Image (cartoon, rainbow, N blue to C red):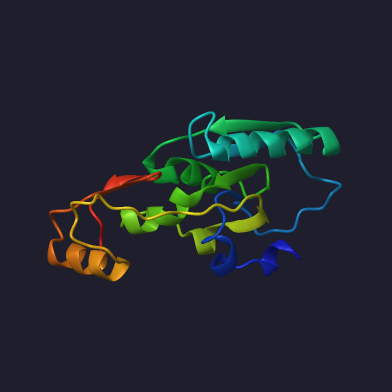
Length: 171
């Protein structure tokens, strides 16, 4: 399967970490890489995206002989790292280790400066993770439908927290 055969509908919702490139241009093996590859992890050191990035970087360095560094750029619900990679030349030397908060960012930050579907191309699905929705027992909702109805009825009262940050839900 080539990178273009992946779609955001199959990769983004289920991938905890997917490597995304800021370029959609084909790269020939003879000219790649032209320098050090920056693997930008959107989380702090020792978090799952960082660890997976380091494992993949080590394998690329050992198997291909490429110079690869992992650079942690945490913050902004992963948008700092994504924006950094997006602002680099589209030469394939900057990779973004996308994580679940990257998918949540557009719903949490309405003025986000990029579109994951249009501005990035997936390269590989490295892992799969599962998410769990939990609420405090004092919240009067026992189903997702009840929770959504509650959030809609009290839009400025309730907040949430996730691996990508905390905010007021926009429903």
